[in-house]
Length: 164
Image (cartoon, rainbow, N blue to C red; front, side):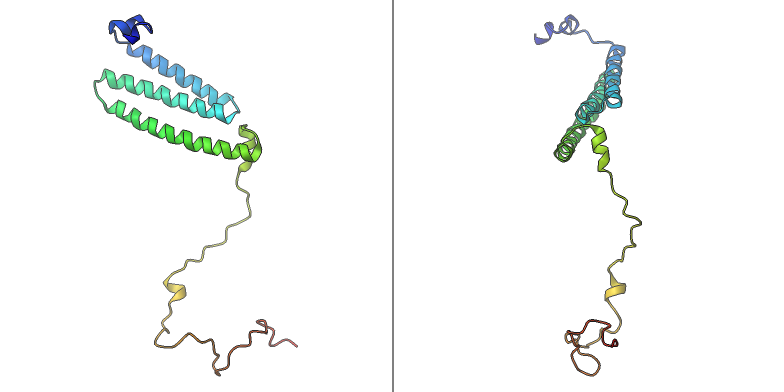
């Protein structure tokens, strides 16, 4: 038995009390929370978030076992999947910030906020109102001739015809 050298209670087949497991989850969550709150290195903060997720997973598995249901363990499986995606995206962001700032400090990454360029101009939506008019009959719109049949003079800029 591989578990005999880890803990004698595990080798004997004795279950751990629920209070111990909840205490372990609380301790792990507290360590993770302190890591996020007190450290300024973004890698340590990501590891602390992972510790907090694992603390919640430990408690979910414990309650799932106490109630003899698999729903808590299935939820842990999905939580681990989300945690893996979070690590992949988080590390990609950390690498991008490190390449830009040559630092993994959170304060250096805070300067990457959006610059305020003033109010955003209103969007002009493309659609039926702007492109389709009622005068589209059988008229040929391929030539750009004016009402007199002469082609417009392209050498003159717009508005320059009336200037002296």
